[in-house]
Length: 384
Ligand SMILES: Nc1ncnc2c1ncn2[C@@H]1O[C@H](COP(=O)(O)OP(=O)(O)OP(=O)(O)O)[C@@H](O)[C@H]1O
Ligand SMILES: [Mg+2]
Image 1 (tube, rainbow, N blue to C red):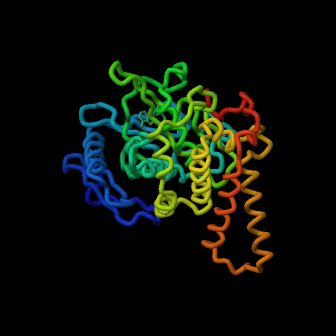
Image 2 (image 1 turned 60 degrees about the vertical axis):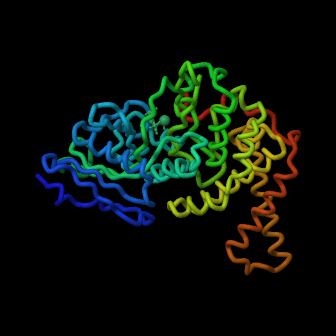
Image 3 (image 1 turned 90 degrees about the horizontal axis):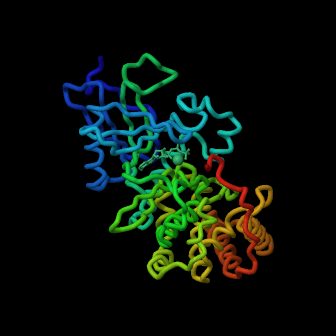
């Protein structure tokens, strides 16, 4: 039996993680250990959350969650109350350790993953939380951790006393159900807008009704909690779909506070944050594109519905208006380069020229340019 002090550190440490902070379990519980991999200095709230998780893991085994298509665990605190959701990256999608992968075919997994490779999801969960630095969207506190526990499955090393898993750890938010359990018209307009704006920025391709939880109280009414951002920040533009597209609130104008939030978004700072997390340059380029689009069209008083109409495909086999404009901007940049014989543009100059051209195309858009509403048969792959 390994002592906590002898436990091997996880072999996989993503390059962007600068420090490793190993939390040692109490002497009498040598089998349990939580290693926190730091991407930045943790806030005091994150540190205290991790302490609670660590204490809980000493008393209660992670409990597999039946919902969803990836391996997900409920983590309890020392009193036995669920406080966190752990999503290990070796249980994503079609990986051999995913306890749910026998229920789905390779093709189904391929369509669910929408171009996000195994191992990329956890970083996206963290990115969504860090992008929400002001807490406007209500993404629950998320961090990346490595947990060593005897109860985990590991197909490659089934007899190991402790199996180490790396993944995202998110605070469990008490709730009254998922949005698809009730008629969506009950949700306040600004609650729907706060989710929709996030989805546009990160081009979420998995915003089905099960990934919006709601809580309800007599005093505050309904509030919405966005979860599961594994399949956001994609590498290409084609997979965006949002189940809120047909909700009535998205046709309402943004209120003053929401508009001011949108117009004050610091796109370059957020893009840099994503690069620091190891999100690829193509995904960051898409984040920038979508966030510029959001700012420009909101300033032109487009509704969230109209903004989503630019982004989503009307017909799955044909490009969206955004995809068409993106291609047009690429062609215009190539033409400028040819004309000015400026092939020597460095990548950052080329990128800023591209964004400039794309922005000017978006600025010319009018609601009359929008395609008719996408077909109602279009919905996220495992939507209800
Ligand atoms: N922060 C949270 N607070 C409360 N419950 C949560 C939270 N995150 C996840 N859950 C619960 O765990 C379930 C599975 O989590 P999640 O949706 O992230 O997993 P998934 O396998 O990626 O799902 P999907 O099938 O949507 O891709 C959710 O449907 C929800 O019931
Ligand atoms: Mg889900």
